Length: 113
Image (cartoon, rainbow, N blue to C red; front, side):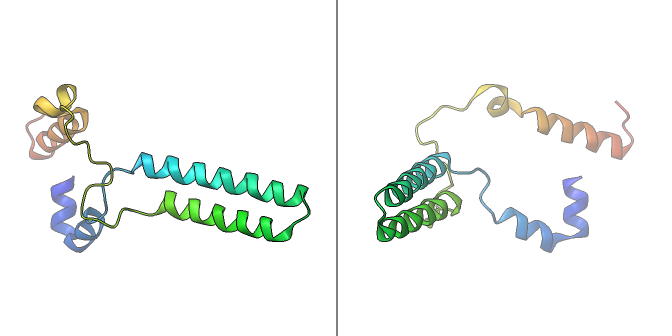
């Protein structure tokens, strides 16, 4: 399927493959935590009847959401696993999707297994 898509629409493939593969879960968790602090700040501003504190809380929520949704600026992968050993069969000889793609390719070529 991938080869067929690449042959038919190489520009689309280049556009999609330029995006990072995996989300950065640390960045998402930190952004969610910052947004939670902003919500608490807004509630504190309402309880203390201080609109300025509520506005600061809103800005903190926006900052946390932007942090969680943005991609890293450096050229490093989104969630680099430095020093970790590869996991299971996926690293050794291909994972489930690789096997499915190989089966699909064999069917398209007429092997029929």
